[in-house]
Image 1: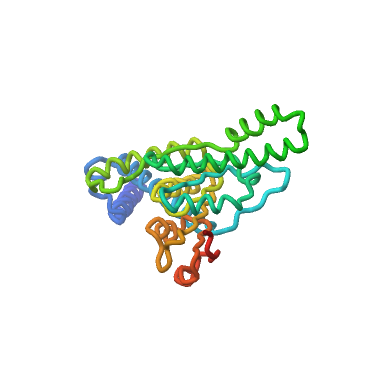
Image 2: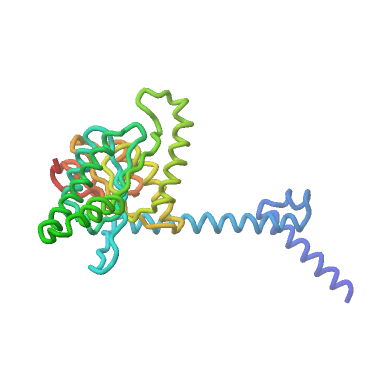
Length: 281
């Protein structure tokens, strides 16, 4: 009886040893003991399961990317919107798009530009001021005797509540060395993360400036971890006739942009997931 029990224990020990060897942890077991080896196996299992879960979530997010933005009912709240501006023609094109945007459905609007780009934010402020002026004139026409109240409520508070203006650090300035740009890129990413945590927009509108890349990538990561599902709408610049800009190429290839618009038909043929909308200027 005792002999059978000893034989069973020996067989059990041999089977455990073979199992550890097959898992590649026999050295770890022999050096650190059985308990630590088991802890190592459990830890590795948790890591593998975690990586698999993240991978599945990323695949799900990529699969859902590209689905149209679901309209809300008339009584529901509008979409908070982040609008990325860039120097030169980028801002002119974006403001052209905003002229036809249904402002009541996309509010509050947060305009963001590079820290060294003051002109773009000035143009955005002029646009928002003109919107407030239009609303005030409508109010003034029908309610003449309340015009002082209209000035305060519509021309003042409406601009503050419906729009904000922020600046973000650039990853790399023009002419900056690549060595020093490593530090500025890290600072820009940290600043972009802080901004995205602060405003958590439901919609992001961008059209090519490099400042949109860290914001859009962070928005994608927010989708993966479930913080916020931000719909990214990218409009490629009219200057891009044959190939995409670097920003557009990154957002297209990584499936970060939910809707990708181009202004030339040959670009749409080259990039099938893009939508041709014609010239917007």
